[in-house]
Length: 275
Image 1 (cartoon, rainbow, N blue to C red):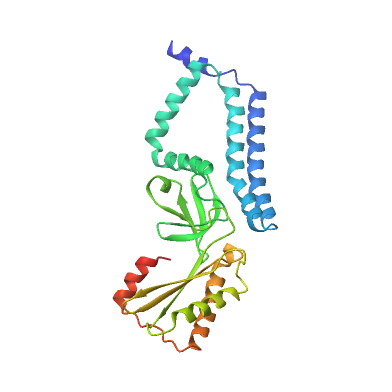
Image 2 (tube, helix red, strand yellow):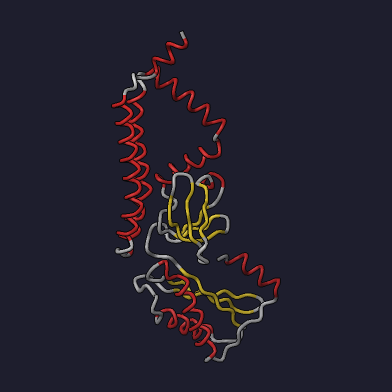
């Protein structure tokens, strides 16, 4: 009786059925491969939000192609009855649950990521202290490239347990913060004006976004921060380097002194301000 039930799950498999399944698999692989090659090629010829929008389509298209292929192939081999569907889902769920719990957790998190979009290709994210640009969002992991050109693979499972910091969140605007530390005896209004001029004259500045210079008094002196946006998130490090170099040059022409921060206070400052 049990043998008859098992046999009843499957259709009569013919050569035509196998060929059709193979053709669907080949087409699905080809579509995924084309999307991963053509869309980045197209995105590199676009700018700003349109580039990020095209890159964000890559994981979505891959998920849609895989789901469509499964919907096509499964009925070729299995009788699509309610009883068969329940039996197959039960057995599959138990096997996956025991053997591939962590892997499946990352896959499910990948599906959630494709829907909620906590990160997309082109985003700059930080996960557990690792910061970089999202280059590829797979079914199980997200691939990022750090400023040191190191490729890091982060499982989507981090969605369940960790914090994910997204610096530009699918947009073309990414705030950069550059710090200066001065001894307390100086004209704060003049220093703010000079630092604002430094930011406004940077060739990397995105003029549509505001430029802010904020300051905070500390026991050892005054902490100044320039908050501004580069034209492209990928220019953030050139932008910050430009602001730092020209900011120091401008401040050296003024009657100000750079602060000397004790090592223990420097560590506390880094913990407060972050990257």
